[in-house]
Amino acid sequence: MQFDIHAPKIGTTESLSDHIERRMHAALGQFEHRISTVDVKIQDLTAGRGGVDKSCSVFVHLKRAGIVMAQEVQSDMYAAVSLAADKIKHAVGHKLDRRRFH
Image (cartoon, rainbow, N blue to C red; front, side, top):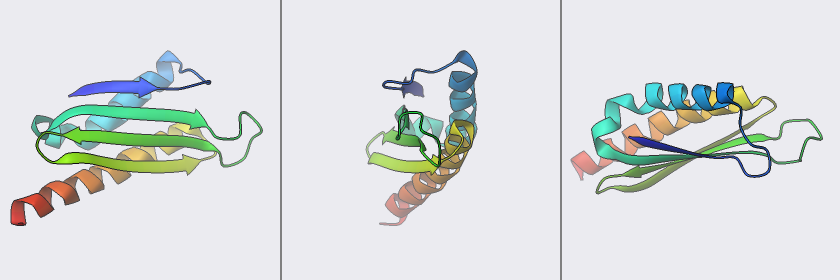
């Protein structure tokens, strides 16, 4: 499973990159053989003015099943990443489960 992290205009720290990879791998590890790439885009929606504006969007490219997306917006980037990881785990599981029964 390949991770691509995009952080236009804000960049990432090593700590944040490690957090993203750990959380996504923990959330998606059980589906690893069904995933080709995971694209994570983080951004500050209001460019440093504060508030609930840290966004994490996750795009999971599944082998033979398309793309699944989840997004979370929080006041803290680490929280946004963690909650987006939880959402994408549920969404990928749901997508793969539906394909198995249809």
